[in-house]
Structure formats: structure tokens, C-alpha cells
Amino acid sequence: MKYKLQAFFSGRNGFDDLGRTLMWGALILMIVSTLLGLELLYLVSLAMFIYVYVRAFSRNLSKCQAQNGKFLSWKQFQKQRFQQRKTHRFYRCPKCKTYLRVPKGKGKISITCRCCGEKFVKKT
Image (cartoon, rainbow, N blue to C red; front, side):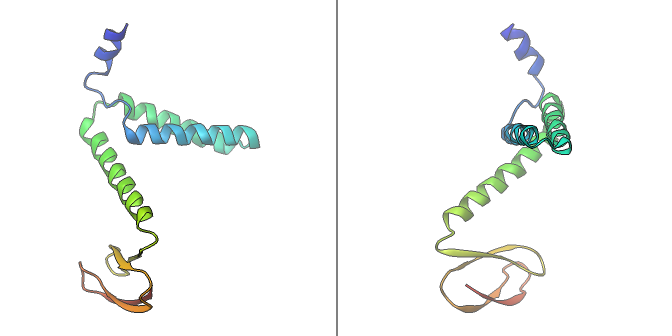
């Protein structure tokens, strides 16, 4: 049986980090929708379950791996941002939407975007 399952999943995406996160989110939504009696939330969680299994059985490995890579980079950015929350502030450039990190406690400063050169003033 184990061999047949391995043979079935060869060449398929399987359950990666994005799939596991979506699966847990769908499970939590389903429990909340059951407790509150919200049918729309239940349908959303069911759609999430279906999407997770479609991704797991997909043979389009490059697309699924690209999605998972974007998710992992976003997750790493959020983890880094959380670790530096006491010493730095994060701002988005109003022009190019790049995240900029500046030290806290400097008062009002002029921030120059390293990508587009846009200058804007923020309080740190």
C-alpha cells in the first residue's frame, strides 16, 4: 500500500508549506463556521480544502513550487519583521511600494528610497 501511494505521488506536488498552512486555516475556518452557524464561512473553508487538494495532486510542479517559494519568502520577511519590531520601523515607499527599514527613536526623519530615490518624511 505504501508503495502504491508513493507511486501515485511521484511527479506530483504533494503537501508543501503553503498547502499545510492553507489546510490549517481551512480547518480553523470550518470549526468557527460550525460554532457560529455561518454557512458562507463554511463554503469558503470548503473551497480552501478543495484548493489544497488540487495543489497537492497537481503535476505542474514549477507553478506550485513558485507559489510555495513566494509564500516562504513572505513568511521569512514577516518573521524578520517581528524579530526587529522593537528596534526598527518598516515603511513602504509611496512611489514604488518597496519596504524600507529605519531605526526607531530618531524623531522625524527624511527617508530616501534606495530603489527609486523618492524622499518622504516619517516619524520613527
